[in-house]
Image (cartoon, rainbow, N blue to C red; front, side, top):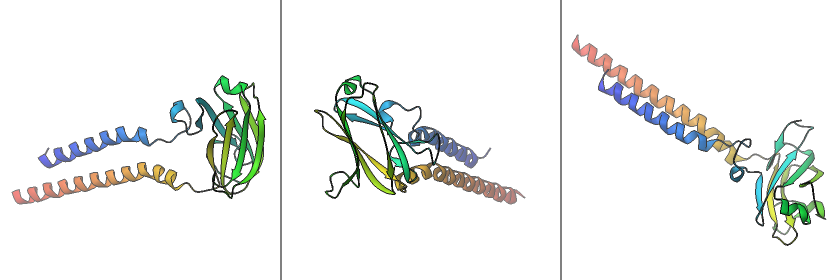
Length: 193
């Protein structure tokens, strides 16, 4: 094996090792993630809550957090994970637009209630656009989720494109290096003749 081929193989192995380290950090899955990494979990006061949205008319088993794929009837479920939250009144307000812009329009309101089963739920019809889901336990500052209904999330698209683009570029580099080493071997063989 020539020195160039050995060098190319070392570069390939290094790049693959780098990708092996990089790929787990690029994963953006909801299932089987630690509670601290779950995008549907928020801290309200010192307690954790978990939010899910469902649209059975679009996908029967789909559950969404902040990016809701379609318009229409939407079931919203807030799991009060901390038992302390289950014994205090919690209110929920959904507003169209960003929270605090002054032109927010309340589209749904769940008055303060105690939820001994740990689940606050409601249903509403959402149109395309941005919404803020605001949770307020009595005596605590509100916490919120930004809901994006039928919107493109460009940062998610970029994250999803990173891995295929990296693999494509790596394969291109490998192909280039291999073709370069074959050309050198061909020139060396012709020089010997």
